[in-house]
Length: 179
Image 1 (cartoon, rainbow, N blue to C red):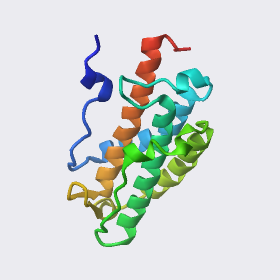
Image 2: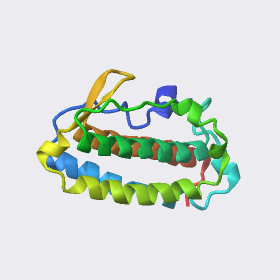
Image 3: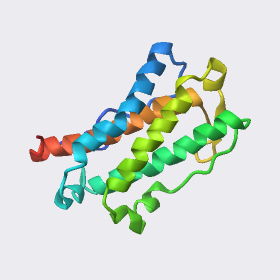
C-alpha cells in the first residue's frame, strides 16, 4: 500500500522561501522552460479513460490536474508581473478546489497545454534577465500573510510544475501506461 503523503506530495513539500544561488535560479528557470513540453510529452495522446483517472484516492483527475496547472501558473504569472511593477502588491487568492469543479475543467486538455506552452514562453522570457533587485521584488499573499519575492515565485512554480508532473507520471507508472 502506498503512503498517502507520498501520493499527495511525491517530491516532498513546497520549498520554504530562502536566498537562492545563481545556480538555483538557473535550475528553476530551466525547469520552468521545459515543464510544458515534458507534460505534453507525457499526456497529449492519452485517451479520456486515462485523463479521467484520479492520480490518488480522493484526488483530482489527470484532466483536472492539467487544467489546474494552467490556472495556477496563469495566476502566478500575473502575480509576478504585479510584483515587478508595483510596490509589494496584495495579490488576489483564489479557491483552487472550487476552480477545479467549474465546467471548463471537463474540456479536452489541449487548450490548457497550449496555454502552458505559451504562458511559460512569456514567463521565462520575463524572468530570465532580471536583476538581483528585480528578483527581490515582492508581493503579499493575504491568505497566509506571507511576502514572496519573485525569486521565491520562480522556485515555487518550478516545484509546483514538477509536483503535478510527478502526480501524473507516477500514476502512469502504477498503471503500466508508460510508453
